[in-house]
Length: 331
Image (cartoon, rainbow, N blue to C red; front, top):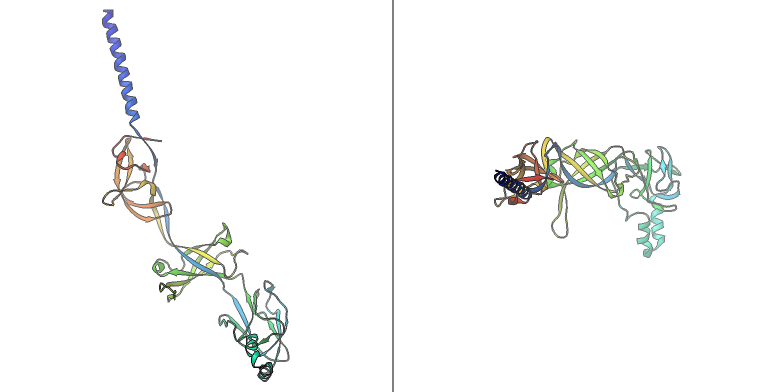
């Protein structure tokens, strides 16, 4: 009787050991995986463009007379107010110019013409003309602003085609951006914009498209592959001293917003031999393949239009058929 009991006990121990070993072996075959949950959120589509900071209120000042600069009262960077005297001019008649050209001699002609402005860049935008009357003309500032350019010096001869000075209102800056033609259909007036630049460091500004040009512009190139674009005028909210006219900026235009979109990281998605996209989800401890339909591609994730649900557990960086219908252990 004792021998029978001993035999049964030994057999039970062996069976228990084999069962335990079987469980351990089974656990060793489990595939360890990392998982994530789909995120439901609003997503934004963007159009990127390059632009320049411009002054909304800039005055390029010219004198509607011939004359000689007698005194300059300001320099670049100075703040001025409406009515401040900027330059004083002694006007003279065109007869004096003719005499001076003749007396300068034929060899001096080119230099003289350059001195009186015949090689200057005539900017016709935002011009303020000052009438040449009286013995001395005072050029006064038409706006509150900052002197951004002084194009003459004392004793220079001037003519009506020479720009004397420029005044800009830095409280009224905007961005003039070039929208590539193939993205122009995606934007519209009132779209919000994020404005950044290397010159701003980590700081950025918000803005909005105020106006889109009704016509496209074209920049030719020597290779024949020119650029066609649409100009967009973009407002700048809460400008600061970092903003300077002429700086190059990047404009990130929010062209579309989608509400409550389901997204997963790119690392979740695989493709089969037919280029069908799929993911693996964990169901009752098993990796199950799910074919999906993707939508917009974001910076680190992609929109999922169908194939999974918000409460699904999705496997990150799956190794294809190595986990298909396999028992998995979530790390």
